[in-house]
Amino acid sequence: MTSRRTRDRLVQRLLEQGVGNRQVLDVMAGTPRHIFLDEALAHRAYEDTALPIGFGQTLSQPYIVARMTAALLDNSRSLERVLEVGTGSGYQTSILAQLVSRVYSVERIKPLQDKARTRLRQLGLRNVDLKHADGGFGWPERGPFNAILSTAAPREVPAELLAQLAPDGVLVIPVGEEQQNLCLIVREGESANFRTEVLEPVKFVPLLSGITR
Ligand code: SAH
Picture (tube, rainbow, N blue to C red):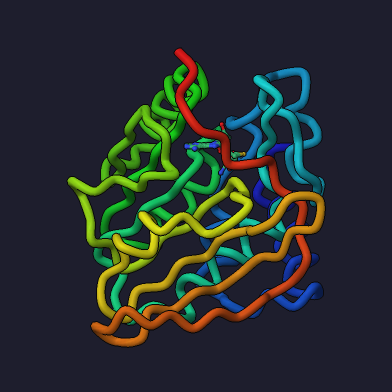
């Protein structure tokens, strides 16, 4: 269930679904997903589905994790500083941490953040900084970021996230309510112009304001 072979099968499926970034696939093949789930759900960790992590939140579907990470890597000039909005279980965080220099991740639900911290430590990932806050405001003290990835969907792209993009920075974010689209937004050089590309329709939990202790 938790073997390398099971993960290789999952990655093979992602490849068939069109995820072409080998680096991302290799990292996903090498990262246990079951440790990010409660024991009762761990046996389903390598199915290509979203799974509940408590507090009404979900661990994103592997295909979506792969797709978002690949979009970020394929379009970023630099991978020095990456912000994640919505740490959740920490699974997406752990994938990013193995591909970029430093990950800053913000989560609004404290118990989820605490669990994620333990798991990231368990995997020996030390290039991650976590913050308990409303990530809709980004993490201004740590920005600007070469890339930002949001795993929760706002109705509209928060201006704060755009403002914290470094020149040529990219933002990968689901946007919308019932109808959501995964968007790739690229800052054009040092300008205040942004190019938006719609990648595909998706279903994410909403980006909520405020924090939960
Ligand atoms: N990347 C996560 C996905 C978790 S679902 C994983 O791999 O498990 C999205 C997460 O975004 C939830 O944990 C939710 O609490 C969080 N979230 C929603 N709105 C937020 C906000 N404004 N700031 C920070 N986190 C937020």
